[in-house]
Structure formats: C-alpha cells, structure tokens
Length: 68
Image 1 (cartoon, rainbow, N blue to C red):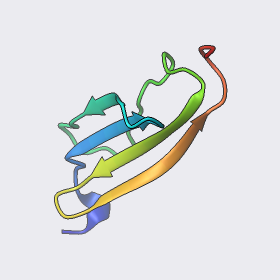
Image 2 (cartoon, rainbow, N blue to C red; image 1 turned 60 degrees about the vertical axis):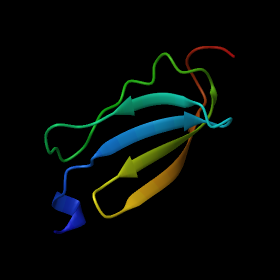
Image 3 (cartoon, rainbow, N blue to C red; image 1 turned 180 degrees about the vertical axis):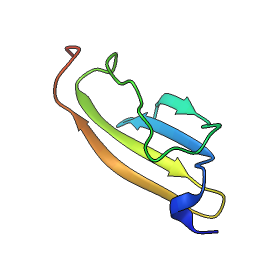
C-alpha cells in the first residue's frame, strides 16, 4: 500500500524525558491531522507517527504558550 494513502495506526508525542504527552489512534483517513498542544509547556517534543509497516519520528519545539 502507498504510505501516503495509508491511515496512521498511532500518533504519539513524547517530551524530552521520554514521557508520553499525547497518544491517539486515528480512525479515519485525512490529508492532515490537527493535534491540540495548547496545554503543553514550552519544551522540545518528539512526534512519532506509526503506520502498519513503518514509523517516523520528528522533533518539535514549542516556543510559546504555557510557561515552564
């Protein structure tokens, strides 16, 4: 299956200590997913997206919002 048309099985966001900050299992295919991080503190996070045969992790820096 073409990965671009495959529904992610999991979306997880971890803080720098490895603590799970957010977890979701999408139940429908979308062009893009919006995740509310408004309650997250300013910090570095890692966004992990899993598909049935692959996984990608990207670094995310939140620089505004709740104070540390």
